[in-house]
Image (tube, rainbow, N blue to C red; front, side, top):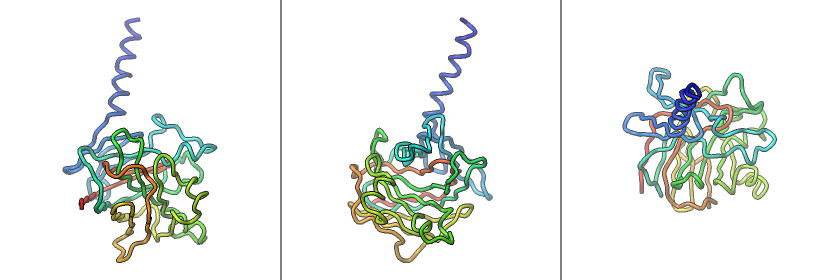
Length: 232
């Protein structure tokens, strides 16, 4: 019994550390939620690296609607954001081997996250299809969703094409993502575009303010740096 206790107690402590892990990059501290993460040197700079934790949150290819577009992110602590600008540089790779045949490097930003991670807004990219030879695939490069009731599959059924669009991006390259949030409206600018690449005229989430997080999904290795937030 004593040997069993010696094994069990460290295991429980490991679980606590895993779920409550916090990482600091510069002056910003992030709490990991359903992701594993670390601060590493990447291409000569310190960055935040995160990947979806399948031990914390399972993925089922036969139940996409219920097992993707979840709270899988590194979220800023001690921040309340309502309106303003969110800008970050991000770089996505696909895991090798990949647990999902159709992995596209899912990476983006969640915002207005409530205290218990039960509701938030999100805009993310599928960079692998950004320069596809197939226009239909390109049209799915940018995605908006509102957790928990308006994930990508639901939005495609309700309003085909309205919450997705194209953007000339790719995996294995740095992408600058800027989101301008005002009331129920959000505009996305990719790679310092002069005009917005994407507009959500009326967001569908239930929150009006909350924190911000750097988000990835299945089979993605995400790298983030230079996160800037301006409140208005």
